[in-house]
Length: 627
Image (cartoon, rainbow, N blue to C red; front, side, top):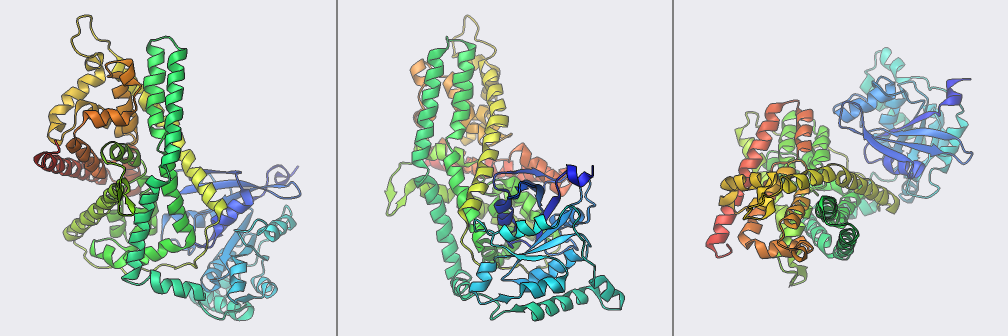
């Protein structure tokens, strides 16, 4: 029996960024997909299973977006090696499905020609064919197919049956698809430069098969006239960011209340069902109080992710990068830094990984060094806890005061990142500027299916962290807070005699000037592994240090509102603008820079900034009477 009869054909989707490749991947695989990393690197690997109407199954791989097979970034190098079948640990694809944007064939056909020169079986998918027709772009599919020498089909990745023709053509390929003949190599061999031959062939295909009334759509021109305006565009971007952070509070509150009530009910039920003892304490005070204190913030994190995904899918993010290029260049960054920094609002790790798209090593390193200053989603539970406890839920004009404070904290991180990158620019020897060049894709309405799949993936990543590292650290912290038990002649609460209590009291000598009590000091230690653990740690500490059962059953918010001063709360909020990032982020910096020196510099300057700014905040707040 042949291998092809045993193993399904491997299909690989390849194409330029912004061609709709991932939307097509979601259309073809639905929920039958998994996300991991390629071996040895932090580039995301998405693989799924395509099941055709006839019942046949194919393995489908979504390759990183690439503008060329002459790589200028790690993503492009991985795509090239996978297409050629040279990537270690990955089987060569049987068929390459090259996805091109039908509204921008001038750029995307050039890449399709490069893929054809690999000499592997391939199909060209003319994606967004419906948008091209609405713009008056007429594509002679049959003529293009004949000229390319490979199958060409139209797709509309955002429509339910938009990939029907592609699936039918894939099935028609059979078990032994035919490879196209390389043609440009022959032209280059005749004395014509390979790049010149590529451009010449692209022009020939466009003149042969494409009638294009204009380079851009009228709606794109109208929107760009406002959204790329140096004044109006920046104002729109600022308003958009402001409204996002307002929505994070206003929309999430009902869902958070429901989760909080459910967690409290589960804790009470378990406490009533089990006899008092270590097991009951572990489950109620450790696991339920700790993990539940983090899960409650899932709605806010998903709302923030939903906005970021929608902006990315709409084609707005590259325009924001272009708009901010001059401002970021003044601070020592480039417009290309915008998307990695925006990704860092979700988590610094993918933000640091996304810096591979920055070709200049100097700009890339600067972006890596300031990415942890962006307010990642792990900080959001801490911010939400402290803002909910100390900032009244009142209106300031049309706006929510708590949302205004959250917006201010995010802006504090952004301004600090620009200030740090400006200082780095003043110190470096090479002060030359590098112009920004990027593609501005057509505007499009994000498809709900792609948003839901993206939210599901990010929600599961968060819950896996809750079920993995956060659960483990919560149990470890419960042990440190519970043992050793207080002696028979104890005069203080039992928690003061525990391992964690002793550590916390010892740390207060260092952190008393910034207003941190011993409970906060204890929570900071597991927070180095994952920032959001601080909330579950505080919940565990206060549950175990409560004077009676009634106090232990109270929610964390009123406990800290009664026990902390406003100066302490403000100091802790400022601490988490700069707080040294989690261990996973440090490991990613080490992997991306291949330098322990850069890891040390990054952690050192962030800790110094956190302590200095918290000290300043606390002392000023005390002087103003908030202590």
